[in-house]
Length: 250
Image 1 (cartoon, rainbow, N blue to C red):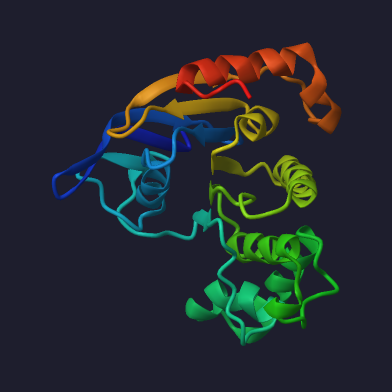
Image 2 (cartoon, helix red, strand yellow; image 1 turned 30 degrees about the vertical axis):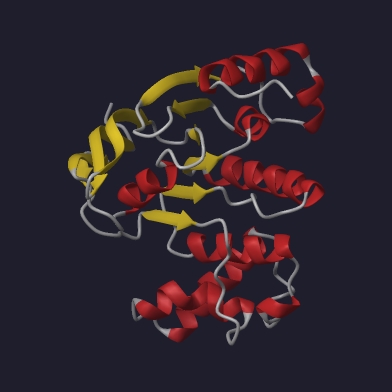
């Protein structure tokens, strides 16, 4: 079986600074995988390579067996900050990738309206970003990533800037959307608890220069529920990941 996303011996250097060393792993179709590691270890760099925004110094990343050499609509990316254009409505922000591709206005409005419904913003299409809460703005950014119907979603710590309650809500919303759509997701996070709660597998990178440190399967049943975080099994998985990355226990 050809992997949906395959990372093959990726190295990345910026001048004399070596960021990634010989990273290899793969994602099968429909998997939810979290990428975990110390700050500055190159997680975002790896996502940028996977999105086609950055060329690796060596190695390659393949989508369905084809090398990724430039951004492509089958691969969507969601950053930590929503980066919505303040002078466009929520709907127009979501339509933007389609407008840039020259999709006719009627068609892109229909697709954008479907995306608004998927992310729970059907009634907020004409609202401007300044009128949205942090969670709503991030949902709008997710809708913008979804309008091209990507097979793979790359997510760079999308909930890192949210308060704890909104973060939990967004985690559940994302899991629900993932289960409905069958997208393949690679999500960067700094939160060990979030990684265990969200993922089928967690890929751990070492400190820079970053190498593949460990891969942990998460056998928790789905759908995931918030009360799972208090279980002994959940705690054991968190402790195992802490041991991999050398994180403090509190």
